[in-house]
Image 1 (cartoon, rainbow, N blue to C red):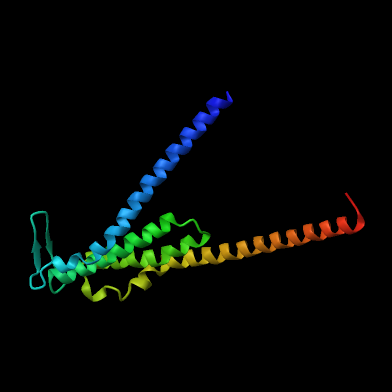
Image 2: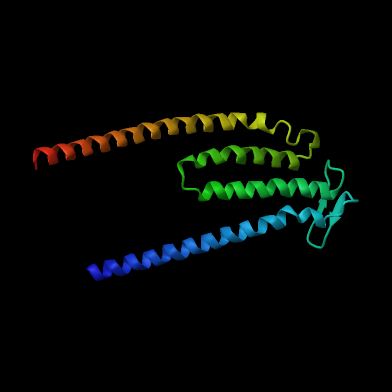
Length: 173
């Protein structure tokens, strides 16, 4: 019975390890691609409002040319990808703070997609404020709770240490 349980446990551990390796590899590839996304705009024509290739056609929308549109679009996409991966892979309690810049980048991306060039990056912070404020309040609350817990743990450690010293000094078992 124990051998069967050990084999199942080992197989499960190997599967989890393989899965983590694949996910880590995908994340590494995405991160390695992001600089290429960031500089993709250099391949777009800077003197035309339309960029036509065999795969796609992109119009400059409200931008002066296709290159400016691609630059704005892929800059925002790159930041959304990087901050999303950071949020998804972070194991720290403060990972929720990453949602603040991620929310701002998403609003900026929507501004680029909606082709209202006069509003891009100007009011995104104010539009994202209703989403950001609850996150900030939540982070402050978690921080206070963690400080209380850490304080209680420190106090518990001090009490245990004092009891151990008392036992040693008074030969109590």
